[in-house]
Length: 61
Image (cartoon, rainbow, N blue to C red; front, side, top):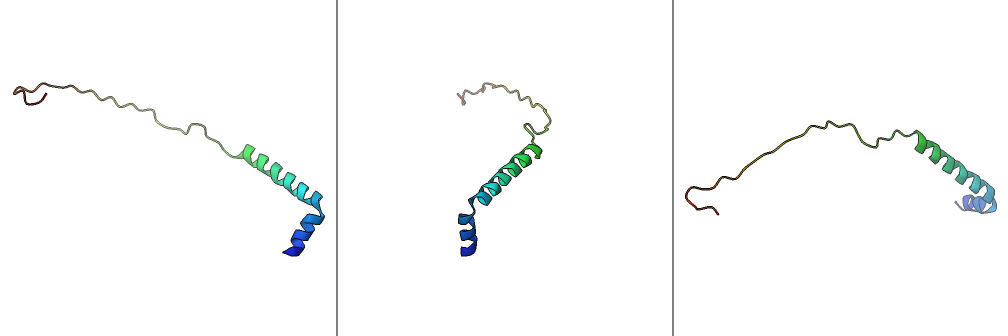
């Protein structure tokens, strides 16, 4: 592990090249991933109607 850290510290150009490679790979991947803004769905509608009837005995107010 120490040899890897020493290599990374001694060779900063390789670290920057690796970072640029990862950045380019992420941009490429983002552009080629299938994206759906609005998924397909059926636009069926439900209509509910109702009314209020008055009670004959006057119990409900």
